[in-house]
Length: 166
View (tube, rainbow, N blue to C red):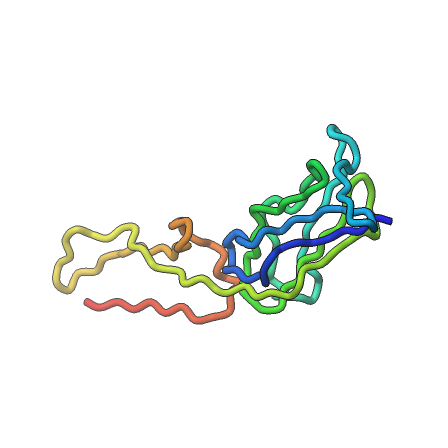
């Protein structure tokens, strides 16, 4: 008999769109605890796919990054996956998806994904403004980790307030 184990070392916790920093590793062991070092062949290894369990977290929650990985020397290491939407009680499911679907699967404990504090950046503004004159200012909402403009805020629940003075 072979068992599929998940090791993360700590309780999962992360921010939306940030790589989960807790190591997510999967490996097989025989009942005696001896690791299985080869699953499939070197050129055609078994693969595992990570997904968010239906009904956990947010209905808008998607897992991003490399969600399907091969076993290498008996291990799968998910090092760059993230959840795109803040909410609580997410659960990740890991299933063997190659060479064929299998009943061998494992799940994470529930974890929370916290919202990021985005910031506003002025992209364009006039150098000179005349009294009683109109002018345009372009502002972007940016991700604090990447400093790149975000365009996925429509599905987020919340209030966005922009004010200006003259």
